[in-house]
Length: 358
Image 1 (cartoon, helix red, strand yellow):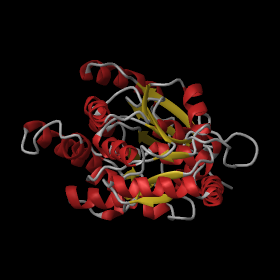
Image 2 (cartoon, rainbow, N blue to C red):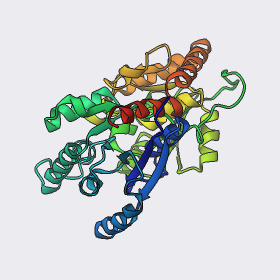
Image 3 (cartoon, one colour):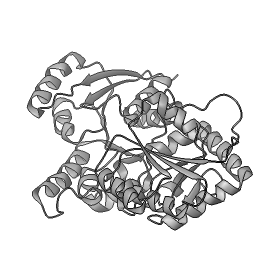
Image 4 (cartoon, rainbow, N blue to C red):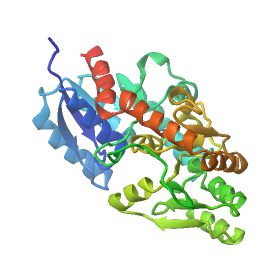
């Protein structure tokens, strides 16, 4: 008989974040009881005090604590509060994200040293650290000088409450215009500039690019590039409601992943890649170490060279000219998602880890 498990989710995690929503739903679908000790106050002093007092009512009522994403700064308090096993969902590195990818600060700055320190310290305090790909784990092992024994891979998947395929067969629609859709934050790992330059290459073809998102670090320069290139086949839609985003994805012939040339693009897999699969859409994304752990080029996705607009343009044109190939990959991608990536499957993998340490 399976042991009944109770998990305390702890920290300042956001329920609007796909990673947290997916794991919590997946655990519940596997019969795990979840208690929540969460505070999102802006001030860390206020947050720590509120979490401390909220935690008191959970003492003795859980088997394992999970510090949800983003939780680096929550780990020291979590370790002080409990001797129970702690699983830390690191999910991404502050140092990699803010310093190596977005380059907000110099790698020699005090802020960079702090991010590197808190990444390493937070992981060292956990009994188990979970990350989304083996490539990401390998980065942590090398960058922070860890041993592999405490790291586990839990894939991201998609929130199927929000992203679901419409009923009926996955078939190409009729129409002269070939719609290509990107959604996400405009940050370096996404490589939006390469999407725009691919649009330039394809400007004489009936291909329209829709860039969906409310902003981000690279958006001003991305908009300037579209203007400078004189493109009329690229549209910035701004942030869309979930309903409007889903409608845009349904109308897409192809969805786009990430195309940046940095380390974060190489070792992580972005939400929208799994979301596209969940909605039965063909995804084109960079050929990276992480993506090749999961997906197969020409079978359930299409891969192109990173930071290479010509390669991306060639793959888009290939699908535009081969309806049968596009439909086959869309079907295969959706079937792969159902078999490997829905919340219950991912939650089951996390439950196995919880059982290991209880």
